Length: 593
Image (cartoon, rainbow, N blue to C red; front, side, top):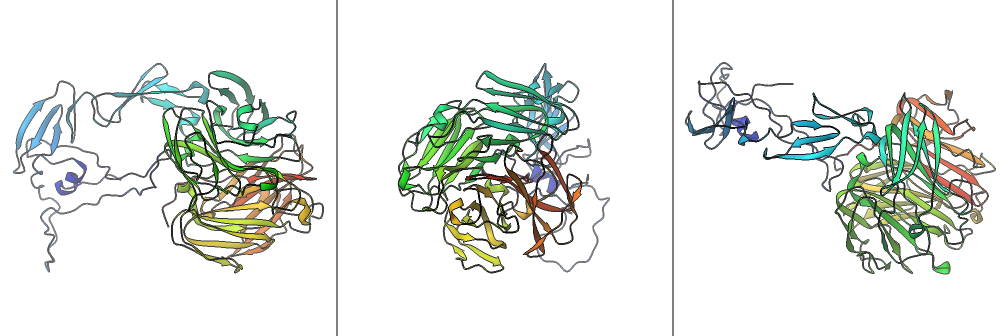
């Protein structure tokens, strides 16, 4: 909406009104929301309203209506306005203290400039954007591997990957990352990513590591391609110390929007998990870590891995409250605190030491990063067979909320029963209060940011309400706990505010059984691959949970939709093995609670 603004309002945006010698048009943008890739919290976009400059700020009893046709008053002294290419400095009395004929262009609030801030121009695939001072251009690149080209007329990058719309798990650029595994693991079972094409046209997918081309495949519309990738020895072997692997991550780019899941490893095995990867455009510089405690019996650590997408990324690491036993290295000390400088594709893997648990650590970076939390191989609970690899690509703090539903996975081979889980609720802020519906025999107060509550071996389904942002993580118990087959895996509960009406989900058909857990509002009509979902059982708060076994499809892909937003997690099980990840989510930047 365009509004006529008075001088008093325009002065707030470095614009002003001149005398009767000419009319000046300005654009006001007083505030803007924080974008992904920053280390600040999200902001709100404010709208500016018209205001009568003759109205006093003091209390008044006058009911006189201002004359909307009255001329504006003089612009404040020192404000710079433009009359064509002439920069004029207001004297506060209706005139100008200085006028300058610009050799280049004139920008309101700045005066004579080389270019108007924010304007763009093309030179081949390079795009140049005028900086905020108007004295030069910042150079960018319209990457053809992302299907982008530079538009000579608009002066910017164009293509399907330049117009992704709302932030979600669907994107065009990802960083698959090998995570720490048990050294006795079978290296013949490959690391892989499953790429599902969410567009209506064929996507070209390119995977590189540093400057090396690793793979290039085409993925037809509505199809899925599995791409196997070599293990990165520096990332998979050993059990510490904390280390910085230069160019350790893969970079995956697609010419069309896709979803990407990484499997560590691909095929059903006795030490494995998988992650829903988040596209680079949704990354920020703020993360809260979920992991699991060091397994002292076998000297196996929990970990988290930080991946940079830009050169000269400064990453600050903070251990949980009071610190935790950490294997020092890579700029990180033995309490989990430190700093590192990462370049594009670099991976910093932080390892717990004996008695340590990295859950509740914070990662803060000045540029966008990815953080994957997990464990090399652990029992859950400790002492119950058998150990399994854990990993999960963590949601940025700005996407977390205070409302979640938690439900146990299904048990196999008796699908009429449910499998026990551990639940951790981790505070992103001090003095966080919790309410459970139905109530749980668990603490309801988290004093410090990074503190967490653990609810052990439960098959309860319930809602979590927190008055501040929290991270909620679920862990399958081991097969020896007596809840059917499959060993530990971890998944983040999706904030209710990030539920969607439609999903494209991949379930690895090489596994013995695959399931989707659907959490939906009562009365929602949910379909999977066109078939109606039934068998919902109440979870509380007006929502219900259904376990759905996923039949094999030719590609392993599944479509899910509903008339009302709902949540979904996907998992696969076998004898002593499992994987578990969110089926998808929006990744909107949510305001603080």
